Length: 456
Image (cartoon, rainbow, N blue to C red; front, side, top):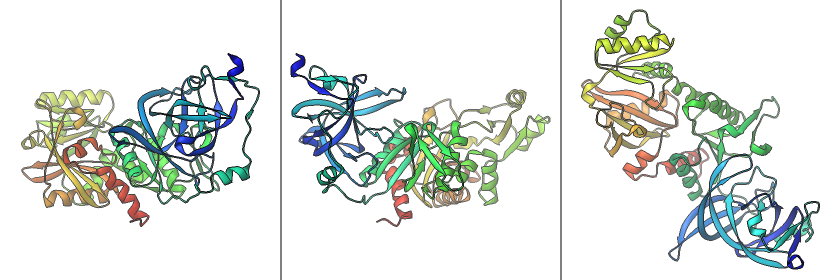
């Protein structure tokens, strides 16, 4: 019956006693099905043989100093679609909501609401049968003064001992991105996932800015970890360059990423540093196909599109006729191509050395699927632990230095002439190498940032 229901305005103050949150401003939205609470540093854990989740919250909008450390039973993980169409997997908790004189259990999802106007969204599932909403009113149950708010949170004021680190990437569910977020949180840092496509820039001599969805200004970061997929290299590097202009430490610089994505330029840099590569020819729609094939020792040979990535646009031509056909096909596209000596004795295997801050922290051998010559893990290749030789480690470190990359995946092939460098990757994946070696590579990346800030 309506006389037993709580009447709320479109905005109200409420509390969560079980979470230790004395008061928080909520947006009351019957148009939203699910309730959501702002949370950062979200990490699941086991307590008394049951699943729990711990998280931090800045309960007061635009106040990053006030932090409450919370934990609650974890009841679900759920895909939630926002009003803007953004899909995100969230942890779901159940806790007690106190609003006015009423108190009842509700389910809430945990998500970073930095870009939203409210730290709390009260949805219709939590209100069903208990609440009536008057959208023209606000704070029908009262609101705290600034002094009372300060008093309520006086013991929560603290300066963060960790860093504020952003992961600049495209997919929050990608293994590598999730591991980096997790590793940073485990080491006490405030981690934020920044979707590249939802960032935009203000170019200004006096007040350059980067804005995020909802208009939030990203101006308080200590460090950024760029994880830029090849298809958005230009825009991702533009954002990284803007962070650099704001004096934010970037684990890989925009210039280093840009040159690593240019296959020809990167090979020229590597050769200038005295690093051996398979004999390679470069041409733009070559007229003299025969000489290009002869230049690299004849078939079998590899033909690569200069703009190809992750094994795409790479073809093995086993005969002269096949090589001519592939080159002529690319020629018809007016494409820039690399023609490269095929190292048959490698037998579809290469070595991935993971270099962080001038040191090889792990190495694996990648082996192609039967009938495949590309050893990329995402193409079905398998990874196994291998001890890189001192020469291979030297090449990997030298290659990362030549490209000016603090983090690099360096691919080396074993040939009859000795180890040869294939490629340097500025956003190397973590799944294959962590899975094979059981090493905390993501943690090593965070430690490289800490080293820059001289944190122990």
